[in-house]
Length: 151
Image 1: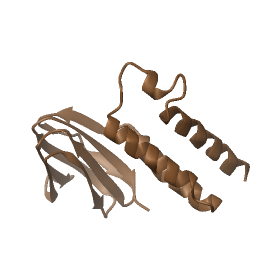
Image 2: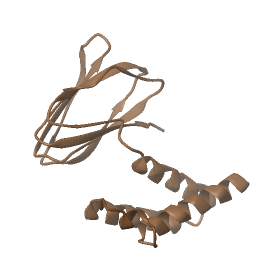
Image 3: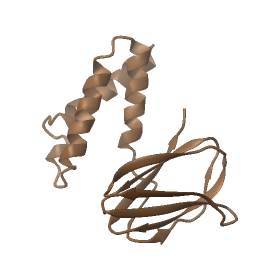
Image 4: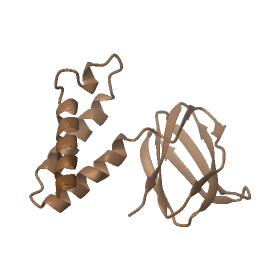
């Protein structure tokens, strides 16, 4: 139980920072994207309003994933080095440009899945099997990619 209380305290602190408390993330030179910031604030508020403690902590744990830095980021085209996953995982990707195309390849260079985004935004794909993979990315602007645990 003390671990749950500690987590709740940490999450409350982060929520206060996101809400614009003095010395918060918003006070830094680099301002976060306003739309993403507002979306995150709404998500924290929704978690806070959950009555069941275990469900609330699970909600906060999911939000923590959203705050992780990207595993890969770049601009235009790139190929990542091989990376390993030990269990099913979410491949989450965000593009700033109008065109984003990505191929998930296995360790032999064979395409497992072609993915794309039109008009920017964010999407995800579930990698079902553990293994070694790489990504071949072609975009018209900046992009970011995360490898998130799948429940």
